[in-house]
Image (cartoon, rainbow, N blue to C red; front, side, top):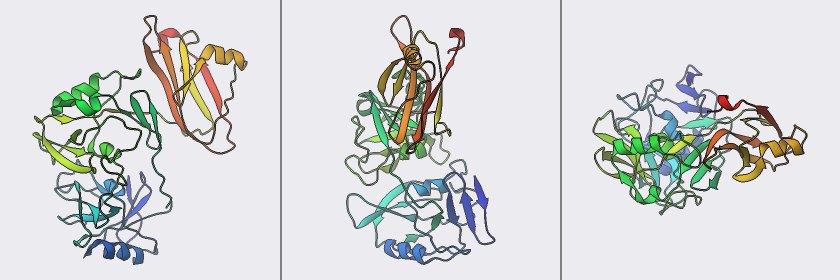
Length: 344
């Protein structure tokens, strides 16, 4: 949600906690001068502005606004690209830029080129690297609560756009059945701009350097879709009839309660996993801890998952939580009994 916070052109994005400048006369500068411009900018009493990263620039976009691809609260933009502070991992002479009007995709350009500048600031300047964890044929991004498919199909299978949507919809993997094809902004969260060949975290084992589909149509076109190739992480556009690679994802439920996790289960056939490690049947855990198990875990991000095993040996995930544990926090696993017929 965008909120105007000053008489001057500044907007606050509650989702990213960014203050975004929206100056009427935006300068067009080379990359180094753009860095210095934001560094020296004083606007509405703030003097800690900086040039946004390529990922932060995604918060400016609104793909439903076909007139500009820009959040409607931001009134001033230009047809040409805007510099980001993200440098090209391949060559130090290049950096990433982002289009914000009619062609909202990113490219790398020589830092000597002149492009427009839009500065941002944040009260929380600490930028943490995303934390990934591999579990079987999936990779979990704990920082964003996203689970990614990472099967042989992620590097070998190519489909057209409609078939890609259907593939993810029908995917059953590691007990989960709620997979979908990512939007262009969700797909961009995969890109590690500090890496190349591929521009992916090391936890991903299955990838190709060709284009990967997103579910986002290009500029409202019924015939084209946006995507990304993971050689260096550049955006691309494909005819929906073309066969591209795909990688499905699903959202993970998270909790704001940093010290308690509620898990619903049936005693007889449910198994608890923490960070991919099997802890055992919940009935046994309850018996060992007299009904109130306390679990000692190191500080950091943790993933709880409960699986229900059927008579034919198949299993389905029936509960999960991701939470960040601070130092000296206690974790109390609150286990709530649930009737068999209530478990779906």
